[in-house]
Image (cartoon, rainbow, N blue to C red; front, side, top):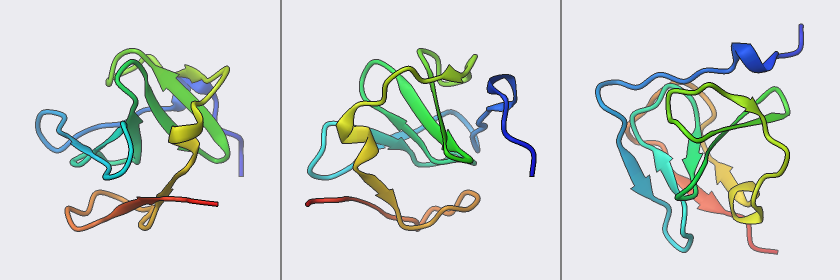
Length: 94
């Protein structure tokens, strides 16, 4: 498997982007996105093949993230596949 390059990172939405809050956090997730995308109020984040990408715009361009907020890193996606309106998100608590 070839590593993902920053220019290859992308996300699309079924309709206009819709973000829903993740309970117990200050972040939200793209409810109708084809990829798991998280928004912290300033940046959008997505993880692909162990690389974290960030962007100030939901449509990109995406760059390898220099840092990812701890709250974003604590999000556990219980479904890591294509869009499913019934998927759920939770957070790790040590």
